[in-house]
Length: 135
Image (tube, rainbow, N blue to C red):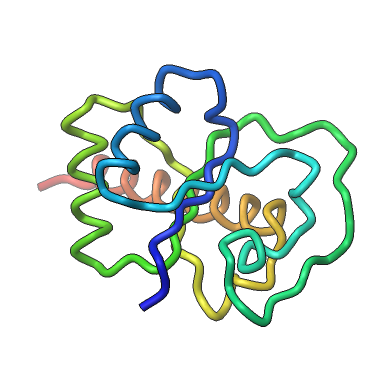
């Protein structure tokens, strides 16, 4: 199993970022703070997957504003543990969360963010539809 790694976007200098880093360090998870200039790198490269090379591209446009958390090398129980810790320490919800997979490891951060936003919007719509339905 590869070393557990978390890619963090837009947490630098925030209280949530400090709490999150503390939780991850206690869990012995490797942390990588992703800066905007690295947005065009494959997420697998950023997460340290061997065989995935740098794109060699630098992002120089406006960074995206959302916080995003990407996990690599976690088992289901370790993901559950992390989510419990986030709740226990009262961190605000992080809607853009993902696990690095064979499907998304070659995507760059912008592509992954776009997909996560679509998924989050779809889940929100489904939850709203469920609320509207009579019991």
